[in-house]
Amino acid sequence: MADLLGLGPKEQNFLNKWSKIRRKGMVRYIITRGFLYGLLLFAVWLIGSAIDIRLSEFEQALFTWSQFLRSCVLWFIVELLIGFTLSFQSWRGRESKYRYLS
Image 1 (cartoon, rainbow, N blue to C red):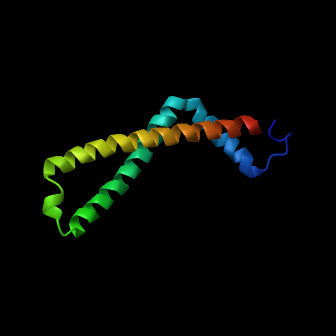
Image 2: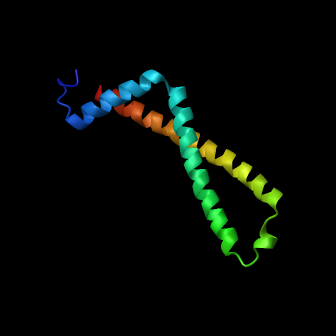
Image 3: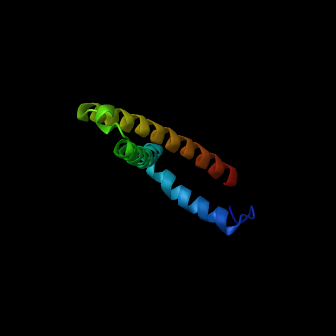
């Protein structure tokens, strides 16, 4: 069908890859990608916070260890939610492109 529509190799490659991914299911895609996105965002936040605390003149006054751990847990949850949202939007966009091309 894709050959009849005159799709280029880039579009055919997308159709092949996405059909394999979509066979595995939306939930698996959102959980795996969302977790990876969330971890990446959390790592960026953690590195930024560590640099900020280290370079701060008032590093002792900024955080106690328990406050920092609470902040880490909170931001980890927030970043995971952002990651799941991004992966859901990615799924919707790719599904839309897949339906358009197929």
